[in-house]
Length: 137
Image (cartoon, rainbow, N blue to C red; front, side, top):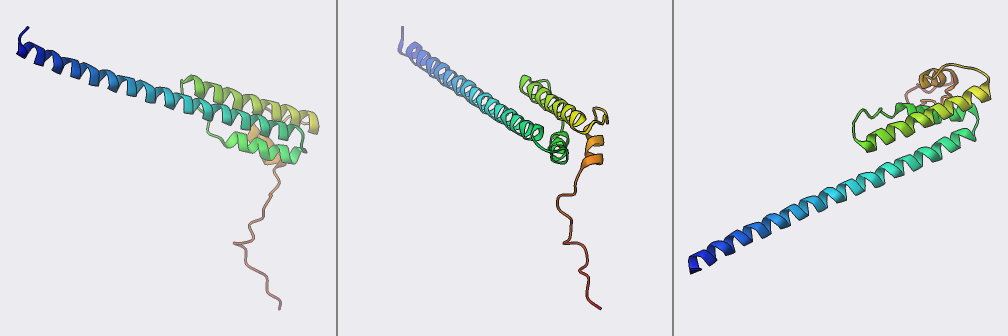
């Protein structure tokens, strides 16, 4: 082989090495991102379980507040497995809390969380900052 052939081979090997390192970096970043998303997903599910357990041990008015928290989370319509798991767990917890409320109150307002929230919600904090302060005559 001539010197020119060795130079070309060296350049080609350098290009292949850089491309291989770039691909390795890309797939490592993809793996790390998926790992992070999985951790966030399981953390959210663990928080869901804690809140559901708290609702199942509380009075109906407190359980409705927790139910409202679950119901106000926007449903995940994605097709990724993580989003499907998230939405499944959210819906399961909503069903369990509503079942608890049916048992505890003896009423059946249906499966819509908003009906339960509207009937049993307690105004936890009155908005006194916007109301005028009464003055003595």
